Picture 1 (cartoon, rainbow, N blue to C red):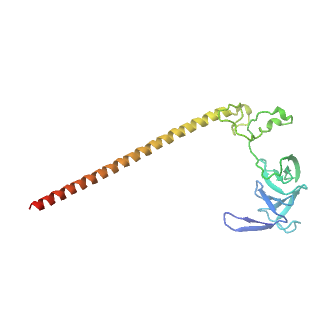
Picture 2 (spheres, helix red, strand yellow; picture 1 turned 90 degrees about the vertical axis):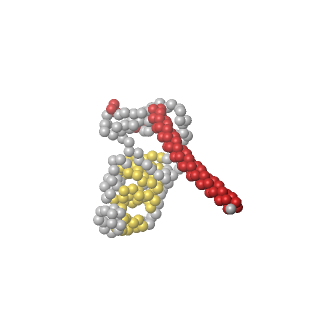
Amino acid sequence: MMVKVWSLATGRLLRNIVFPTIIDTIAIDAGEYVFYAGGGDGKIYIAALNAPTTSSSEYGMHIVGSLADQSRAVTSLAFCADGISLASGSEDGLIRIWDTRTHNIVRMLRHGKGPVTNILVVRCPEIILKPQASLGRRNSSLLPAPLEKYARPTDEIVGTKAFIGSRASSNPATVSYFTEYVMNIQIKEIQQQGSAAASEMEAERLKLDCKRALQMVQQWKKMYEDLHQFCVKELVDEGQAKHD
């Protein structure tokens, strides 16, 4: 499979890179020096984006190396916030965290429900999360609450589930937060303000329509009066002509 690298500034094709397999996903490193391509053969190929290369690589021109762990097709890639760790998802249901400096796997996560088709790395290092004692693992307090399949009723009061932290401070004592209940109240207030503004706009529109309707009535009234005067004049003139 061929991947083309273009310059958006000049619109020129910079290089063609031919991979030995189908490429399903691509992730560019933070320095935009190389990019990682997930292959259908289970390997993650490292290709030069801006770096000068030679044709000495075993994989071909511009491919400088690979990451491999006997996995099935790699379907998703995402860089972590540190710019070094690379998360890969594959059809075997495993998520592998790679150290791109050493090309080693530092952690593996299993998705038991099927293949991993997409990965999203959420960069929120300063958000305070509620500890989950039921997990019984080290650093369990750093894990977010699991996603819920069904939406909760809008009027249900649920404790402190939503936290908004200040990026300017790393001290947990100075981080401000809002509960889900408070946030719902603010949302309702905004919606009510929006409804009031919409009602005011609708009233102004109705006033304008009424004004136009009154103007139309006046025009029809004048046309009727002119027609009436014309008919009366014609009848008077015709009566005078008969008497003469």
